[in-house]
Length: 160
Image (tube, rainbow, N blue to C red; front, side, top):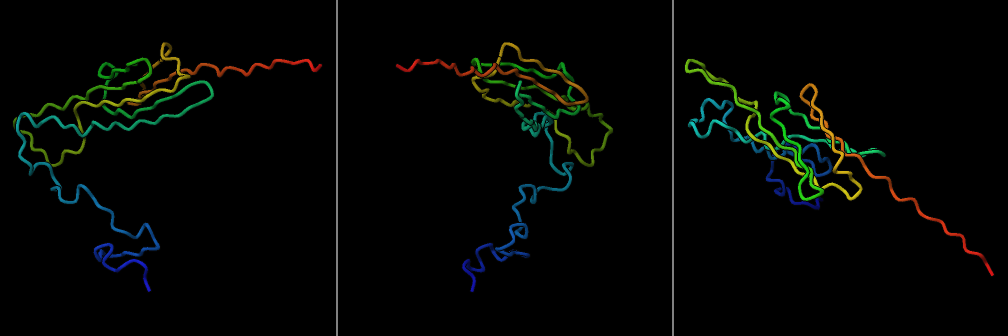
């Protein structure tokens, strides 16, 4: 006897309630055409905003917070690293779209272009006045040094 009705998962194939990897996962691109060349493109719709979610890793070391962003095809002149409101790190920029020639025929457009922006609230121990950023091989690295944690003061008390 099953605790979950059989139509719980809309009777999709390979459903096994005990195996979470056997479920059909909703694919947001399932109904999209396989080629963007079938979508009419106007001059205003040529810039994609699919690049909006640039992937960024944030790790904390004993000395600093390190942010690494994969930005392939973006030049360092096209990237801005700012600290806003005292403790908000903002990484933004733009990847330019390739020029289209009149006689070009596009069969697939998967690489995204356009603007991106990501913001991170930094912890109180971040030294925002010493932020450093570098770009190498399409990877942006932003290093935010940490202030030393205050050492607990020990006060001896004489016993009377």
